[in-house]
Length: 258
Image (cartoon, rainbow, N blue to C red; front, side, top):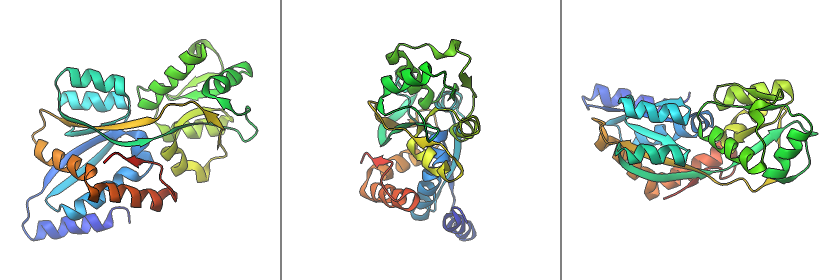
């Protein structure tokens, strides 16, 4: 019954002759896999029957490339360095922080001891992993690279380092099957945790995970994209984010920026 209420409103709008604007929202797979973005889209559509949001999940690098090619109207990503290049190319009409979440290193229940991210990664490397990486240009992968560099380790040359080139959901499955470690965005992990044996490690020192929304400057649906952004930052949107967090996770995982 996912998004059933919004779909019903869309049908009613069509029957009543209300013209709809279709906005393609391309977002990082972590946000899509968590379930939050679909629920947010449904809530927004319920109050804006003239706008339909079509959600596409890809790694951040691919999301930004979709924006460059005109394949999406709104982008939601979490790799600030990659986003900065997009903005510098003057491809963004609006660029705003909309959510923050966190990353977790997950692994087998009897995994390495607690510590800072640097200590934990060195311990994983010291025992020969295994460690499963997305290696797909995602915001999660960008953060993983930064953490390995801070630990002074080049894991790509090691046999225990496994690259999937896939999204968060599949990467978690591979890590679970192999009794391995991986870096995950918290919401995506929680959404899959019922079918995983992996557990979050007690790790400190991992930077916050910021999600920015970009309204693509060349988008023909720029006005509708900005309406979605403004809603996310307004009280109605931030209240929806808070409510949906509690419905999905029982706590606040994605902190609204508005």
